Every structure is written in structure tokens, then in C-alpha cells.
Length: 81
Image (cartoon, rainbow, N blue to C red):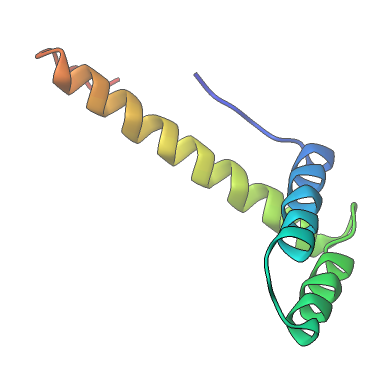
């Protein structure tokens, strides 16, 4: 199974996470401002956002592959695709 986030989905996820950290975590104003600035630099359509989306997809894919390999090994059956 492959999960691929397009740029818009990655941006939405990143924005939600940053907003939750700013609103729900006790951080000082300087840190909150740095997070807001980072989010502003990663606007939808920007090169940093494209790179972030690529990195997110790579990390998700690697994690899913690791879990699948672990499940196959647990069932005493291992086959590398």
C-alpha cells in the first residue's frame, strides 16, 4: 500500500500540526513566532513546500514498508518484493 500526499494535502497537514503546537503546547512567544515564520515560508506552491511534501512522502513510504516487512516476518513468512 502506498500513501502519497500531494502538495496541497501536505500543506494542510503541516498547517494543522503547526497550529496545534502553537495553540495547545505551552511555548514562549518567540518560539511561536518562529513557527509562524516557518509556516509562512512554506506556503502552498513554494519550493520549500514541494521539498517538504517530497520528504513527507518518503518518510511515510519508508514507515509503511518497515511495518509491512515486520508483519510478514511475524507470520513466519518472509518474501522481499
